Picture (tube, rainbow, N blue to C red):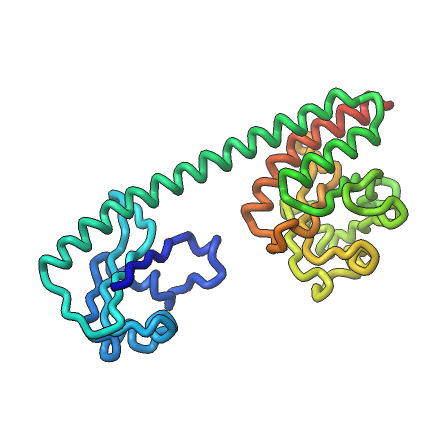
Length: 284
């Protein structure tokens, strides 16, 4: 007997979640699915799940805490097995306990994420003490955000009203000054940059070199000379006014940027914008 759990996550967080997904189907049934012979079971017989794990018999039970669904528990046999009523009762009791344990783990993870966010805000706030030198502020902000976001590179680009461009501010974390000094993004109001600037809060570009908008965003040099593979741009707002963007590139763990990364960076960007505006006013 093999026991396994498939976690349920919202569609926005899963690229493979669809109406045809096995977990989705079982959760919609809202009751245990019993397959004494998987080879004749309409739901399981043609799935990669059953084929790869060589499952002959299976019971799948939705994991719920109250009305909230947190996953599906599978109890599998690699030889034919007929589930008895007493077995199903015990399996369901175990599933109820597993559901509570999983939900508690999810709540703990969410709390840890909140702690990380608050720590990040405090770290960025410490940059306010460096107002005597605007370049020190950029360095501190970039380094703090890069570490918190787990990124290899981070830059502040501020909007220049005269040229209508986002201009990279030195120093940049993880990018040589010679490359960063030439980096600027023209704001074409009818293009992608304009959409980020006026409508969207962020832009995720994974596999940058294959993106059709590399030229529009002037990313070619960062790709060839700095080795940018994946990048995330988030608006910097001072009140209701856009003042620039924070750009993080290449996650250190090798994964791509997600909506969760964008949300976290947006939180940090809000504090960073206040720090940068204060530094600019002080310098003036």
